[in-house]
Length: 427
Image: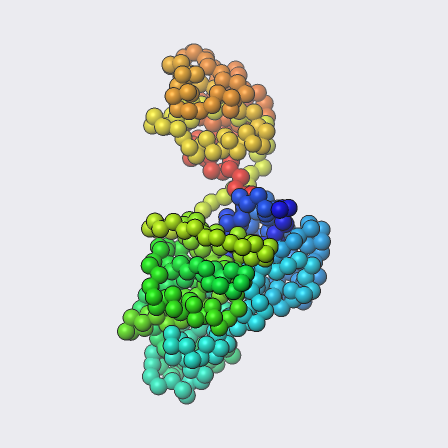
């Protein structure tokens, strides 16, 4: 199959980063990202197009079509709820196919009130109220009917508190208060509408509505029954998920359904089920098989730093003892950078005063000699500064060595804790 050009928009969301991580190694996909603002996407997507209009801008579709035509985009993957709705509504106008479930499903799922109304006879729905006068008792829980994450969600303790919230003019979904645990259930529906995969996971720690600590849960009969019922009522194409929360009796109640990739679907992907890629297979008309490992897995996410630097260089000089080899093991993080630099056409030089036979020890640590343009093995009195060319950087754990090279050669020098600033994460 020919490689397909896939555009992710907007490319700066956690959803976009999961799509990126899921597709970046596929030989069938060339990834592009598009954003409306300067954001972390520049550090993630090798091909990133900036300054597009926002999802609600009238000119968005025309601008997207310009990008689609210029880069020969075959598919556009929405990576935000608002973008999903907008692109779904305008899919007939766009010059690329939108990777999304049918328009009716997207419309229903975008509003919690529409979702609850559509599923109104389902036994797993929470008690929900169309107006304040219908509420039999407090507390209740409100959330913007059209929103994402936990934005605007609030526990309402009394009628006065509710009236103040409703006075804002925002359309809210009002439902019973659910005090129990919250879960996400990742699902996949194949191109024939058959529900092929269900994976419940916990929401142990949440930031901005995204589960940043999550572990796999057993798929109970009740969760499977809810997933199958939702799938029978709505028409899905590919990956989707729904969220449940326990009521006071420990029974599952539906919070929302979303026909898109979730930001924490990486947990499901770690089991061998790549939902963003499987979804593309649906759109390519491919029959799919799913293999899932049965191991327990815990996902935890925190901030990660990625860097852009204006340093340019052609040559890298790296030390061996306590640098390439650290605590009698290979420094895997440094090796990752060296291999990346090698792929980019940089010249690598091993520059060392290693006391033993350097070639024997390279073999002992399974480091290929051919990785280096030259292995420079100097004696104990040799000066590293005598061997360093211009247009280079120098990596060594020793401050005194770095200072000598910095002062005499005038090139950037790096300790081990600085290596992360040299890595290029774009792909």
